[in-house]
Length: 414
Image (tube, rainbow, N blue to C red; front, top):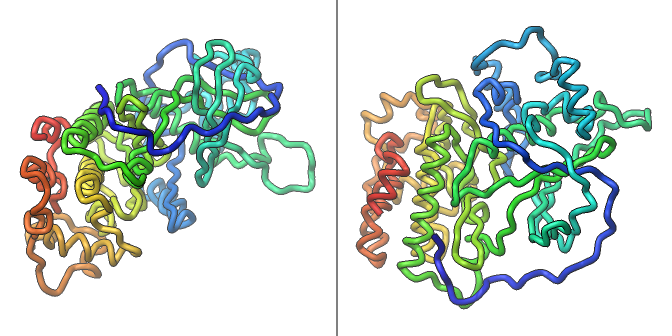
């Protein structure tokens, strides 16, 4: 299902020839659902643009606070977490996987086999993030255009020139492995598909191969001459909520829904992307999670108040911000700091009731609780929005996350 629009917001980049490296690549040969045990081996890592270092410390605090593993136990403790039995490790290395990747991220590559790196031709660099670069490339075997996300693993600075596993940063490998494990759990038209991996035994870089999408929602919305119609907004929101429903049903919280992470092709098909901050959750077996997730403008009030016990409501709040932004033509709560963002939320959506303050027991409640209550004014603020959109906005932008319901219910309500 796609939402057609008049013209492209961003022209296709010009092709550029790039030297091919003699690396080995991998493509998936079998779908393999990963158990909760697999993911619990991967240490939680958090990337929050304003405070990346604080995010890492927060994630480590989660583990110390009692985030417990699920499923079977490892037979023996190993500081590298996920150290496979010798014969399994040997099989992976023989298949072409580098030893350092097999040791740290064996569960992420299980069931996948290599192919050659020179079967991909880089065409242009199309994106750059904190920990990765994204390239447009061509699969020379099929002719298909794909997106290659390069995740470099820099060696620690030591006097020895030889790069060994012990000299690599295992945290970055585990961070990547968690994202791969999560992506392999998901299979939905509105979730970006991981099509393979590219690596070599000697290289300290890994490429994730994704289907190629021409645009992202933020770029389209900011393009001059593009104004989304009401049917287009409805279509985008239906796809977003459908993708979120699939993620939540598979036990995945995205935790960074925003326009730049919603990819759109020329046919109007929307796909949720960038699962770098995603995590596995089980409502029946909760464990502490960090509140230092979700980009600030789309972060729900419970996270701003320090909640470490949350669920699907965090993604639904972000979806509500996206809906209102598409209709307003600009972000609705662009706070510069967490305090300012919380103040904007209270002014628009009303401050929490006394009952909510008592039952939630949020860590920062005492600090950020307003001296006088704010009245909810969504309908007055968005009086020019299509009337059919207001019930969904009211549901998604509810202060109490329990009242945001589920993506499936919101999709039906739309």
